Amino acid sequence: MSADTIATNKLMDKLFNGRRSVWLFGYGSLIFKADFPFVERRPASIMNWTRRFWQGSHDHRGTEKSPGRVVTLIPRAGAICEGMAYLVTPQVFGHLDHREKNGYLRFVTDMIFEDGSSAEGLVYIATKENAAYLGPASELDIARQIAASAGPSGRNRDYLTDLAGALRDLGKHDPHVFAIERHLMELEEH
Image 1 (cartoon, rainbow, N blue to C red):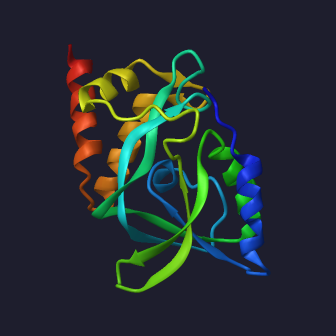
Image 2 (tube, helix red, strand yellow):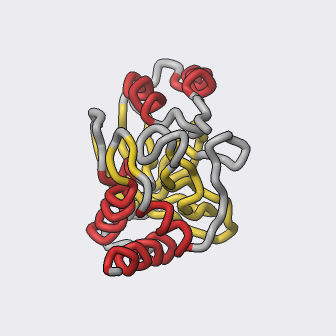
């Protein structure tokens, strides 16, 4: 089921208060599909969050009747989620709010860049309270669902393999993402 969050995210615009730019942390498709203008792009990480394929995609990589699975962040003490940070102007959030509308809310987070410096920024997270949240499943079951799903933005498998490839390009290892990718490849071989 879809969970439109555009109006809720718009309420956060007051945080911009005349700021000309803000950092945005991407951990899923924002790593490999930056379809928005940005001032700067840098590898970064955030603490105490882990990436999981637990969010339903009813509008991009699946449909209402056959949702795909995309990543969200789950809190986990001591975890490090690696991704990409973008310095953007506040005007970009109109596009991003629409792109991330199926259950994702903006949250403020601290991000750490590879050089050790840090900055505060925003991240989109789909919490378990949203109607599109699918929750945990085995990595094999997630791979099966991904293999069977497609939507207006393309096949769900492409989202998974593009994310895995982008993480490899960054030199980052994500056991959850890579395990699902392995299962998907095995399913496709049979």
